[in-house]
Image (cartoon, each protein chain N blue to C red):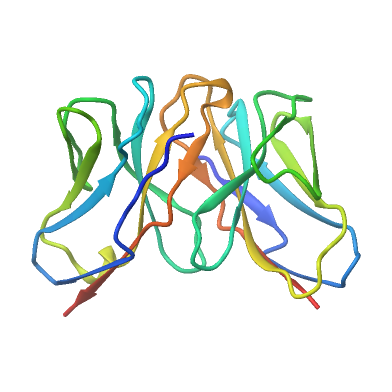
Length: 111
Length: 112
């Protein structure tokens, strides 16, 4: 299974734009890139996903490299509520469409 | 809106004990998953089920059994709890062909 690599932690300040990087050098052609975030005592929460094109929604902008070997989750105007572990995940295109997790990036946000 | 509920939220067991964790969803989702999360590590897949009465092993299935007797519920059994084991077990569900995976809030296991 392909894997993802993320920095263990990143820091930001309220109101800033944050770029969370993810490397997935061995990604297969049919694997989607997912991002989830997780706060203490809760399960992961869906943020966004994409295959090849950049995507945007109310939570974040996902930039996917043209060779698909890396992606960046961009959070604009971060607030204290955005502090969480951000998981960059690949979705297995085979049976069950399993999510394959890395270790995630702990994003801290200062007032 | 639907909900996915895991019970119990906290579970303390003894070494060698058989422990059962339950997960219920009312989304009418087809596929359900059990993941284990250890401190400092990513989530690892234990079992998943594509439909009622279907069971598929994940990377971490040894030491666990699972059961999907109804579409709405998926249970996981730790067959013999290991001393000092501490982990969070997360259940998730997804509709066939859908893109969203919904997670429960987890069962926190401690074995003494």
